[in-house]
Length: 189
Image (cartoon, rainbow, N blue to C red; front, side):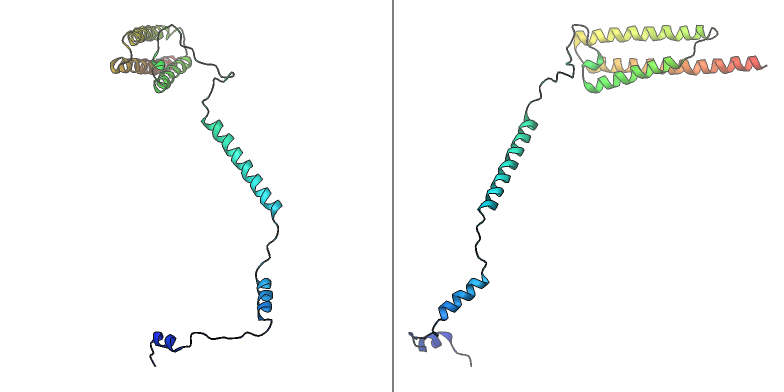
């Protein structure tokens, strides 16, 4: 059963003339034409594809140009001009500006909540005098910042000064609350 294929092909006659039936080629081409799709003219469709591709490419190019273009000064937004005055803590970096603004806003907010009466005026004046001293120290540190440039010790001293002022205002509120509670207790007796 097992035969060598090489031997089979050698024994097979080399030239065989097999005749196909008449019209075989025509029938084959007809069947082939039915099975294969006919090529239609898609000139309009391909033109629309090309036009859409060009529009998308132009849109992306314009978007990239706008994205990578350096921003110019917006006439609506004011530009910051450095004054000849002394630099503050906020002029060193945006983060320090946020810290400074936070503490100053908190100090002002807490001071605005204090209710001043003739009875607590002396206590209030003592705290205001200490706040004034801390404010003068802050101004001195700001001048040092301008003279020597930003360094860690000066920046920490400025932040600590703001913390001290906020703590002082908070203690003032506590003392005034205690004072009001004591005076209320004395009035009720």
